[in-house]
Each structure stands twice: as structure tokens, then as C-alpha cells.
Amino acid sequence: MSTIDIELHSVSKKFGANRIVKNVNLSIPKGKFVSILGPSGCGKTTTLNMIAGFESPTSGEIRIRGRDQNGVPPEARKIGLVFQNYALFPHMTVAENVGFGLKMQGRSRQEIAAGTKRALKSVRLEGFENRYPKELSGGQQQRVAVARAIAPSPSVLLLDEPLSNLDLKLREAMRVELKEIQQDLGMTFVYVTHDQEEAMAMSDRIIVMQGGVVAQEGAPADIYGRPRTSFVADFIGKSNILPISDVGDAETGNGSLRVLLEAAGVPIMAAPMPGLGPDKARFCCIRPEAVRLADAAGALDEPANLLTGTIQKVVNLGAYLEAWLLVDGGITLKSMIRSTRLDKLVVGRRVELAIAHAAVQLLEE
Amino acid sequence: MNRLLAILFKISLAAILAFITLPLLVVIAASVSPTPAVTFRPSDWTLGWYAALWDSRWLDPFLLSVKLAATVSVASGVLGALGAYSVAYAKCPGHTAIMSFLLSPMSVPQIVKGVAIVLFLSSAGLFNLLGTPGLVVAHIVLTLPFVVRMAATAMFNFDKRLDRAARILGAGPAQRIRYVLLPLIRSGLFSGMTFAFILSFNNIPISVFLVKPGQTTLPITVINHLEYSLDPVLAAVNVASLLFILGAILLFEKIGGFSAQFHGGSK
Image (tube, rainbow over all chains, first blue to last red; front, side, top):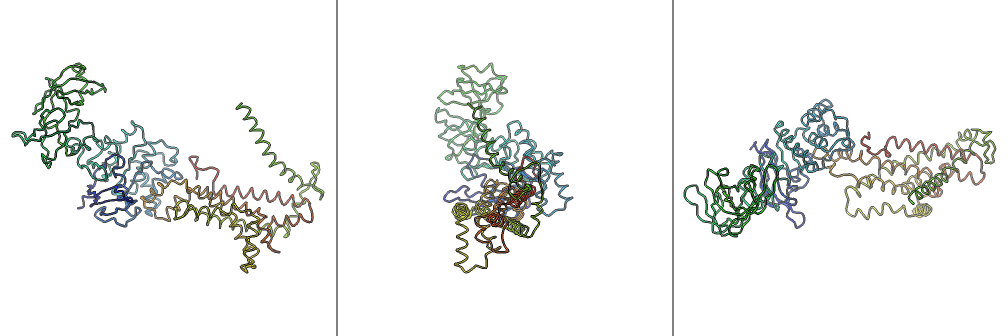
């Protein structure tokens, strides 16, 4: 019980007639970096605001460190929050901003100074104590916002798309830093974002939300490798999502299932999906990097589907080539192939493709 | 064409400034004029008229005006801040209607306000409120819209995410007002209070109905004096008031800091 920091039990939120969050159940383990990932309007920010206490659930229960938070105002929840626009106090110096939480706790001057120093050190922003937020760059303001939120040592830190106002390079650097800060402090981070790369890069656990419900929850590798729905497969990374029919029974041996690619009328073997009955599978997902050239260099040492197709288009992305392949029967597959194989990818050439059984993932909807 | 416009703009600006300041120069010159007739002779001047101001005839009205303006400014500041808070910040039910109501005295001519207040006091049998109490209330009616207006603008521009930020950091309602809201609307509030102070200190059209013997404000004393004589004492009174108002503005500015609004380093 003590290993769970935040629990949501059948939490729903209505604004007027709109149900923004529908019957969400979550448990966020202590000391982990958990992302709530989803497109805008999926209910992720409302969920965060309910955890913070700025919104109260229409029904359901939120527990923080085992205690029901119903009626507990944000100022009494003892959690940290990093805002998307930072929301630094413009009339206070960096030190005053960072020390604000400790001051509100009624700590002594020395404790505030020590806590401020420690927090600024962990975000690597020492020497800026007497600057005002306006005098700092976006990345520095971001660090101040994180330092301010962690200075009072909350057990949980909520982060609301904190990197979305930064440019790409800085964003990528801050991802690594945020993860390091989280690990150094051993604090539970709940990170709300619409950026799947961010979520993949930092999280121990990802909660994918769609239309107010949890679409899937799991470790990043699980979410990426074994998406349950076409929404998740499409939202996280790139994928080929193909309608299927005639899901057969498990074949003996490796347990792969025979399915028919609807558009092409081609049978392929797919990975078994525990908990998903054969009658429920509607689509299959094939990641572009799983579509390989079936020659000596691309050979797989596991059971694979062999298909024949024609190369339609090749885009060179530097390290990788993105190729569109028209498979016999009439479906197009997108594939990612290493640039070293550029000589094999000539538009119009016929190629043999290999896709591992395990890489064909059946989806519910 | 643009250059021509720019030159025309500068000329008209200079003309306006001259129009405002030149009469002041005449008054200043008159206040040091040696003869009772208001003349201007640079060769020959005196501070005697200023010395004449050190007399209860002028000092008492001056002190009443200062006390009145200070009381009105503080009262309007408190009431205006509270009004602006519920109207522009908390957005209480009917806030647009209440805002219009709070600002409405601005659109009534001052002389009408003065007559209305006297008629109200007389029909309500409250004649004993004439003098200082009546002046205070009437001047609050006069100045409140200005304070509400400026404080409301400041509150309207206040980023409410800062309130949330303070809240999640553990600040209760009173702490959020003290440490976050007030410092950030301070300059707007203080410029409104400065306005209130000046409006009250200089007011004639309303005060004229409410003063009573022994409780007369400085501008009314000047008007009364003007009925009998036009001598350099009046010029001296005006120059002294002008300096006093300037000092008051500088003081308010020092406390409120409304001209230096967060150029990265307000303190």
C-alpha cells in the first residue's frame, strides 16, 4: 500500500453535459516517472488538475499517499506542480520564487536559504539567485519552475507539458535532465504530455488516454511493442495499421495466429494476443522497422512472413530510409530500413520482404 | 509626408505643453511680485506673500484639505481594491452590471453630484453631516470610480496561473493576496489612489456645497478670497499647493512604483 503514491478510483469529471474524464482508474507507484500521454482534449490535463486539487471529480475518489483527497484544497495537498508557462512570480527574484513554498510552510530564514540553494543546485542553476524571471532565458525559467516545485520536498511532482515552450534542442536536453533530477530525488513524477517521444524517453510507465478513458497503460516498451488498439499504435510511433479478417486458431508450435489481410487477401501470421479473443481482433499493426528486406543481410532467425512487393517511394532521412512498398495484392507498407541498404532500394524494383510473426500485432479496434 | 507629420506633431505637442505650463510661470512670477497688483517685474521680487501663508487663515484649510485627501485616498483605495477584487478578479455574479454601477459617478457632472448630495442630506435630515463627514463621503463618491477603474485593470491583467502556482506551493487565501496579488496590482492601485488624492485635494464643485464655517477646504478658501481681492497671496497659495501636490505624487510613486512597472527589476 505504501508503494502507491496516487490512486484514482473510478474518477469521472463532467463540465456541463460533457464528460471529460470517464471512470478512470489509476495507481501511480512511488518513486516512478509516470507519463499521462494523449492528444489534446483526451482529459489528461483535467486529470492532472484533479490530482492537484484545482478541479474536483464529479464522482470517484482520489487518494494521495493513501488519504482520500475529497475536500482537500490544493494548498494542503503537499504536492508540487510545474506549469506549462512556468507561472513564475514576476515580482520575485529567482531565490524568492524558489523559496516561496518553504516560506509558506513557515520555515526559518536559514531553512529557506538552505532549501533554495539545494533546489537550485539540483536544477544546475546556481548563481542566478538575484535575477528576476524576465532576465532569464526560457530554459532557465523552466529550471526555476522545477526548482520552485521541488524545494518544499513534495513526495509527488506533477508536470503539465513543461517542455512545450522550449525549442527542440533544449527540449531534448531537458528530457534527459528531468529524468536525472527525478532519479536523484527519488520523487514520484507525473508528467502530462501530448509528445509521445518525450513520454517514451523519460517514463517508467506510460498511461495513454483517449476521449477521457485510459486506452492503455504499461512500460514504454510494452506500449510501443504491444499496443492494444489502433489509436495507441498510431499515436505512439509510426505504424502500418491494416484491417484484418478470418482470424484463425493458434497454430501449433510458436502459437502464432493466421489472419487474412483484408485489402490484399493475403494470409499472414500474427503474434498471439493474450486476453484478446480471435473474434475481437479488427486490425493488425506492423511497425515500419519490422518490415525488412528478406535477403542475407536482412534475414531473421525467427518465424517470419514472406511477402513480395514493389518499391514505390524512398525518402532518405539520414540514418534511415523510409520506403513505401506496394505488396502484391494491393496494400502499401511503410518501412524503415538502414541507410546502408540504399543500393537495394531502387524505385520500381521488386523485393522480398520479411516480417517476423511476433512483429504483427493484433489490435482490438 | 511622414516627416512633415512628425514635425507637425512635435509643434502641436510643444504648443500644448506651453499652453499648460506658461500660465503656471505667470502664477509663479505673480507669487513673488512686490506689489498687490499682480504684475511681473523680474528685477525686484519678494517671498513675503509666502510668509503671509503661515497663518491659520490659510493653514487650517490647508490641513483640512490634506487630511481630507489622505482619508479619501486611503478609503477609496481600500474600497476600490475590494470592489475591483470581486468584480474583476473573483467575477462575482452580475460583475459587469456592478462594474458599470461603480463607474457610473464618473459620468455625472460634479456640480450635479454636489447638489444631489446636499439635497439628499437635507431631505434625510442629516444636516449635521455637513462639513468634514459629508466632504469625506462625497469625495469618496467622486474618486472611487477612478480607483476601481485602475485597480480593476490591474486585476484583469493579473495572470491567474500565478494564484494557482502560489496555491499548490501551500499559500492560503490571505497569503496569496498578500504575497502575489497585492504586489502585482500595487502600481495600478497606487496610481488610482494618487488620482483620488489629487481629485480630492483640488475639488471645488462638490466641496462648495458641503463646507461650513471653520471646516473649509483650501480651494474653497481661495475662491472665497477671490471674491474680495485678487492679490499675490492667491498666487502664492497656488504655487504652494502645486509644490505640495508634486511632493505627494513623488511620495506615492516612491511607495507604489507605478511608473517603473517590472522592467525586469521592481523592488
